[in-house]
Length: 314
Image (tube, helix red, strand yellow):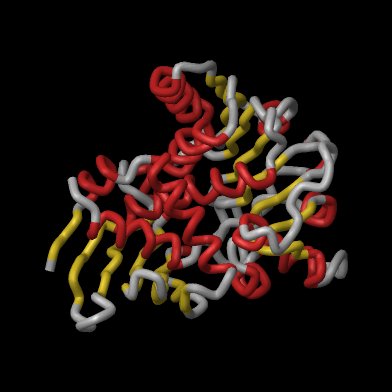
C-alpha cells in the first residue's frame, strides 16, 4: 500500500489543481454522483475532536474514509490543528491501496472549496479580501482566493496582533500584494468585498453591522454544532449556501443557532454550492446582496484530492 506524506501532498496538490478537483467533487456531490454518510464527530477533552468521514466516488469507483483529529491548540506549538489520514480503497478489488496525510489535504482543499464558492458567489470585480483568523487556514484561504478573484489587497485580523503581523509579512512576500494586519476585526472588514472567517471562536467575531452590501463571506472555522463565528443578523440577512445541505441542517452552528432563535427556518438555506455550479439553484441575484458560504467539508472533497494524488504521475 502506498503512503503519500505531507511534503508530497503540499508539493503536488497545488491550489489551481485542487480548486478544479474540488469544484467537480462538489457538483458530483450535489447531483448524487457520490455516496457518503454524515460525518461522525467524537468530542474529546478540552474541546478537542475526533472525526470519521466515509464515502465513495462513483465515477472513479474508489471509496475510503478520512480519520481526523482537530486540536486547535496545536497552532501554538507549531503543529497542524487537523491531523490524521485518508485511506483509499480500490473499487474493483476492495483492497486498501493508499494512505495519505489528511492534515495537509484538509488544509489545501478547505481553502480550495472556499475559492470555488467565492468564484460562484462573489462579485466578479471583488478585489479586497479580509481574513479573520491567522492560523493555517488563513494562509490557505489567501493562497486559494487570489486564484479566483482579482484580489489587490488583503486585510488580516487575529486575537494576537503580532502573530497577524507575522502572517501579513509572509503573505505579502509570497503573494506580491499589500497585506495589512489590523488590531480590530471591524476595521479589517470595513472595505472588504470578500470575508473569510477561519477562527476557533466559540462566539461571533463578525457582526452584520460591519459588513458592506455586496459582500461575500466564507464561514469556515466552526466545523460542528456549537461554536459560531458570525452573528444571527448576518445569517438572516445573507443569501445562505452550504457545501452540504444535510451537514448544515444538522451540524452548521451559525445556521442552527439562528433557527433556534426563531429568526428563520430551513427554507432560508438557498442551496448547495454544487447545485449552483450545476445550474440547479441560482447564486447571487444582484450586486448588493450579501452571500454566505458555510463550509463544513465533506468526504467527496478529500477523496477527489486523494484519488488524484494516488493516480496521477509525479
